[in-house]
Image (cartoon, rainbow, N blue to C red; front, side):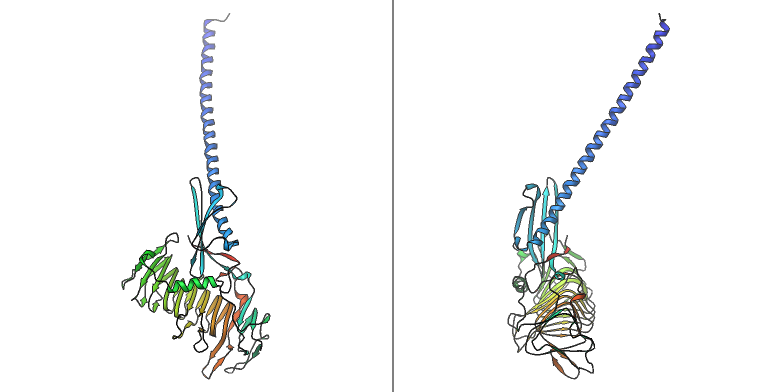
Length: 430
């Protein structure tokens, strides 16, 4: 039989073991709780990430849906579309004009998660027929000389193309056209009617204070003025200012002038639209913008209208000469349009692209063009003029380039001659 001392020792050891057991159990419960909490938080985070990614995916899917089905949404309307037939994948879509380009707004929400994107849309010109030149058939030859380069499919008059000797220069290249030659019609291909109708209405529109209109005075701030494309367009208007200098404007902004305006080279303009009867860009100007006029656009020497830009003149009156003049060493990436619904042979439209000037995209002129630079894309015109020190020539090209193959394969520009069928995102606007 154990002594009392032995029993006391045994009981003391038993109580200590219970203490350690309780402590270990408590520690295990804390660790288990922490592990369960971590697992819950981690799974909740994963669920939130999945929801957020699904919302962003819905937004992009909505934009892609409009790109593949351009007629799905009418301009200025909003459509709620179930992407996969359920409310969980509901996306709100809206399409608006922005000058020669379009805007697609896409919004989606699930629970408390929201996402939205705004895409500037153009036409993937690289997927179209490789038309370098479309020259209307006026029953005259196209004569070329010097280092003229025509590369791509060329639609030419029935009389065709021939070499010429001008200013002491004969034609220097091996082939007359590096590409297919097809016969043109007497009339240029029709323009994109809907887009032209909108642009004509935009240049003649009379804005009011209901259009978020602000009247410009002589003291224009040099601080950055930016307006999100989620807001209404900000209209900056003046019927007095003739020269704009030192301004910094970005985003959803339209500048409207009732008189000729000169944009000085120290202006910083990005994604804005300028509307005036006549517009002149001073030498050395750089920016991303769209310029719309009813009389003349003069782009000075060494300017850079960076991608995606656009210039267009829409002639309204028959009693004024209408000209687009692109200065030497200037680059325009986007497109050019010189258009009149009633162009006459008495006072034809005139476009000049001077030496060393480069234009990327589509150039359309339902008049005559004096072309001495380089067009990387497509040129549509009624005819050519060439003025030298000695004479004035018709339907002659000297040291001019029209090369469709130099247009980047992923170039998304303005489709002027038909409704867009290969719409793509030009850039994101938010």
